Length: 261
Length: 324
Ligand SMILES: Nc1ncnc2c1ncn2[C@@H]1O[C@H](COP(=O)(O)OP(=O)(O)O)[C@@H](O)[C@H]1O
Ligand SMILES: [Mg+2]
Image 1 (cartoon, rainbow over the protein chains, first blue to last red):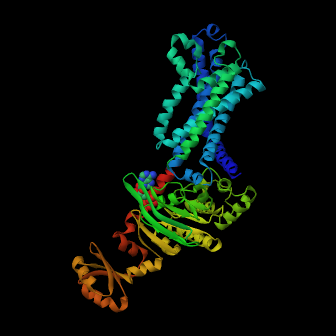
Image 2 (image 1 turned 60 degrees about the horizontal axis):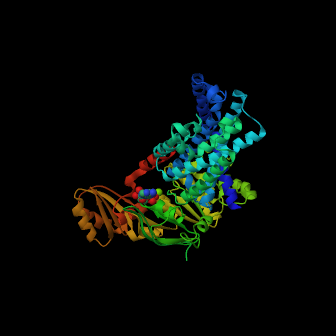
Image 3 (image 1 turned 180 degrees about the vertical axis):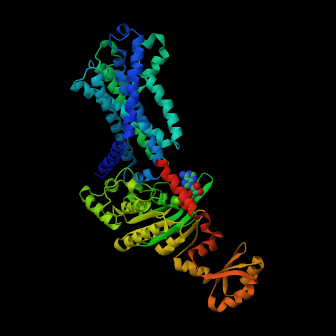
């Protein structure tokens, strides 16, 4: 019971802080819009969408990828707060509480995941107005949230793990950038991965070990149910993402247990 | 056995030995002081006792629980006010205390009552729902003090509770600490590098230098060991004067810094003529009561005030700046 109250408290703190800092909210809506409206339109105008994307406009094709991107970046950079909090005495207040380190990790992780989910909700709502052709039903939205949630757990855990090992914010930003940019570009957010099989098989195989690829695949097929967008299939996507989640949650708990102050 | 006992407690950071073979026995209900300059190892000692840091060797028990074998049990019995600000400044005072209550195992139904009592204790009633960033430094410290007590710990650690605060605010915090001791059954371990603070609040104190205890007793006993009152004089030939003065029976200690001599003299009124005779040519002179400063100087050979309040103020600026 105490652990549960503690978990709730850690989560509640993150959410309250998130809502008090509007700038964080607004800043992170701008980037996805730029990608959608400028890159999407720009590239869309220079390719033949009928041939490659079954007539789906390019900016609509990348919309699921942009949702994924938002979760990727938002979640992983949440780990930066751990670096800050460790430098000063903020984290000690939590670590000196009679709570397990796994509770602390889970609370922080759920806090970050909640931030990402709020973020993504705003973009999903915007998408509803920008792209009337997207498949927005109760069922499809629930699926989209499920996959985004799993990806957010993976990426927040990753951010917290890196954050628990790094002493400086600069170091953290460097390492996470080295991880998250390749993950984004190799997720197929902006292209269809299966076209790479013959053209660049090595890159294709790298995309296949990237958890973000499976989120993009599932979300794209859910929002735009065209057969040519089906790459791995929803159940395989789910299995892979759950696998990554379990692995990273375990690793994260471990990294909090051995974290140095 | 005391509420806190340490046996050979040691912490090394690489080559540096921050805490060196510490043996302590702190009794229930006392205010025990750890007095030492910046870098003496005070915070490291508290971190180990609070199970935030593992010792390199040695061990300790806190509230009869071993810090290595039962760290979570230890954490159930302690409260801490950290050296640096650790309350969330974009949350309100009440929110900070509420979250603390949940994390530290206070049953949800009684948290609101505890919060009201806490604000009453620190005399901040009326400011509960203001954001902490609108609090002054002293108010924030008082809030953290109340937070450390919210779950009724048996042992309360106060790590430099008045660091960087102005003298008036500092007095206010001392009054709060004295009130807490009177009203609650709690053992307090307080670290400080302010002598008057240690003198006023502590039942016993350990002077720490380079991670080692150099003296441990009640403030009065420590002062008595150094002996009598302190005569301070400026002389033209300090070395020669010091040599002569040390021959006198009534002089228990004589320290020279440039032209200034600090001389501990027993029964000053009777012995002053002898002291004058031995000192030679004098340009300036005063008598004052022995303070812990003299004690500190006696045991470590340097003056703790040399670091000054400036260092502390800079430290606070850095810490507060980080979050902005
Ligand atoms: N995490 C750490 N890594 C390396 N050195 C440390 C660490 N924490 C403290 N120290 C060093 O240990 C010594 C004691 O520090 P500390 O316990 O903070 O002293 P105090 O609280 O008495 O000012 C200092 O020399 C400090 O630089
Ligand atoms: Mg300290």
